[in-house]
Length: 252
Image: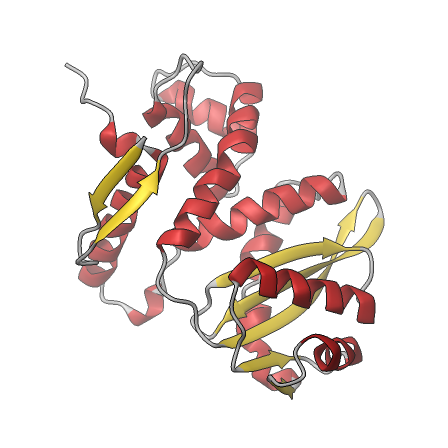
């Protein structure tokens, strides 16, 4: 379904394609609300199930899990398409994850405004891993940054010289707080989920999570209470539009 929608405060028409809910007996409002709860708050599928039960909606945690797998990435991609133009200063960082007792690495890139550009879970943090992440970033964003900021891991410098040698590279621990701070929501979820079970599962969850969670986390410390409420109202409208809930007829 092709929709022509106006986003309040954005001032222009935006075309989007709503997901297909064909074959689902639950309405889109319930599906999108469950997905929102799971990716926005540190809740388990059973926790979401209990919250929905309190509201009189009987839905199993397994159904909620399938909804998150099916629609989470779709919603995240739609939100990314709706956000403002990305910045030209990229901050990259990697942090370790323990998956089934083995140490893996989560690579993350954000722009100067804190927008998550991409994430990638890998086994190593060597030159090959850095090169793979650089190439994935360029393909995903379809853009070339003006500046890349990293910590002093030498793998970044080696990969940078191969993949984007004409881009300025700043390597300094103190300059990369933006990327390091962006790991905090992931750490919170990792604790709530008691760790990830597999590399693939971690990649799937974090790819959707990094697209949905930041949408509902504006830079609150820079806003007044009234400004924050107004911004959140706009963001909830956008969520209804990209999930298709805004186009559903109201119940009688």
